[in-house]
Amino acid sequence: MLRTGIVGLPNVGKSTLFNALTSAKNAQSANYPFCTIEPNVGVVNVPDERLSILADLCKCKDIIPTAIEFVDIAGLVKGASKGEGLGNQFLHNIREVDAIIQVVRCFDDPNTIHVSGKVDPIEDIEIINTELALADLASVEKRKARIAKQAKGGDKDAVIEDKVLDKLSDLLSEGTFIKIADHFNEEEIPFVKQLNLMSTKPVIYAANVSEGDLKDGNNYTRLVQEYADKHNAEMVIISAKIEEELSELGDESLEYLQELGIDDSGINRMIKSVYHLLNLRTFITAGEKEVHAWTIPAGAKAPQAAGVIHTDFEKGFIRAEITPYEDFVKYGSYAACKEKGVTRLEGKDYVVQDGDLVHFRFAV
Image (cartoon, rainbow, N blue to C red):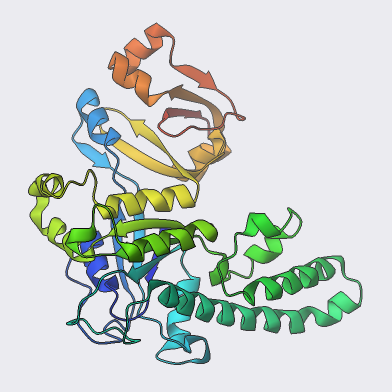
């Protein structure tokens, strides 16, 4: 399952956001640093309006959406890479996630203590980024010392890796997140990925604002947006407090959003940003028993998609019966789609598209 870590300085709204994400109260929220010590973990369904539409057409009751695991990681502080606060423990937790949501305080409130004594979102971002980069730099230097002998002896892989480590050292010295594809070629990328560096993970900046700034943002959020654009990241404006209230309203939440002049919740937009950032797609299996969403990387071929359901499906793959979502909704059933010629059989080289309804044919 996809894992996303929620990070930030103490008292920026991480645990409040986590409570809203998981619609639970299992993440404590309080007005003092290090409120969160052990990471809280929650599984969140990915919003997909297509599933309920398909369930109505297929006349089935069970809907199984795809899901993301969110990890609420305790607040980092300056010096975390050297063990300040509970630094080393927190940094280990961040290494285990696929993407990072960095919550950034973009609101003024004299009643909520800021760890630095002032609200400065860019300074906050750079503190976090610097600490992650310094910790990664230490890992790179350790690895470089470990392979030095092989590289000096002319071992092909060690020579390539040594070059990669030098390049990483230069990039990490700048203290920002690294987009791997922009700096490394196909031969080098596997060596970068095996290091599992925090600074190479995709990042979304969640600009946490007060209710009044939720629709249009403020001067703080504009600074964060500029920073995100410059550093190959994404930015979403959220109000963690409002999101927590929305999670308690249930069916009335949509009406509340409309009153605020917002089309979609910040959480939904954030989850969609994670999917976009990680370049993920959803295919669907739908029938009388259930409608089930499945996550695949963009560019996945039919056998690989089949393997997400069960390894036997991939091993014994024969064909994939594909019905585009829009056509299924238009004609209302598999029988009608086949009659209209929009359902087709595809082989091993077919690249599964987002929203494809798929029935796999396989032999074990």
